[in-house]
Image 1 (cartoon, rainbow, N blue to C red):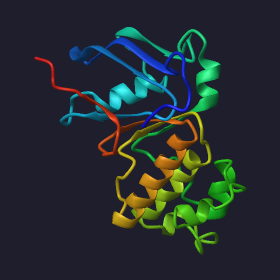
Image 2: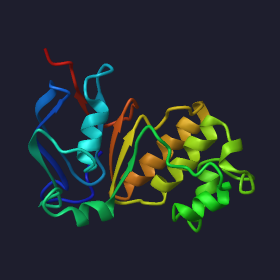
Image 3: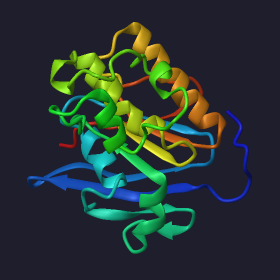
Length: 203
């Protein structure tokens, strides 16, 4: 995909390294992404995929390296990055005792037009999240992501628990996000025209 903007890359990862529990997961990782681009992170279990995404989201500190967004170091000047980045990890951050409508309101995306239809949540407003299937809960969690177009989506196994139809809807959401100039960083998911970083277990 051709970036709709020229100039310097929006997201730059430089010489990143991660050590967890005394074990080096990866080092020397560098990649840059401009508007409309995507990155797929691949690798076996334990290779550091989730750690990399959490470092990029600012939830873990890297052992070495730097991440910048629009030219600003995301650790030294985090606010611009936090305003434009949304992270979805393995946990869905859905309130089980609240209804679908209440969860959408809590996540700040109840007013987004077409959101229920795009995620196949129509007709579920009155149901508590505790009564939803695993796939429905994941789609509800993705509503928080879909309501934040144009920045950077960091998604750890976003298609977990989704059926084929819901995965196709996810692909459409990501494509629309990228068409608007958004950036996507994902693990365990395949996209057309995306860069790929493969992590391997370090000796």
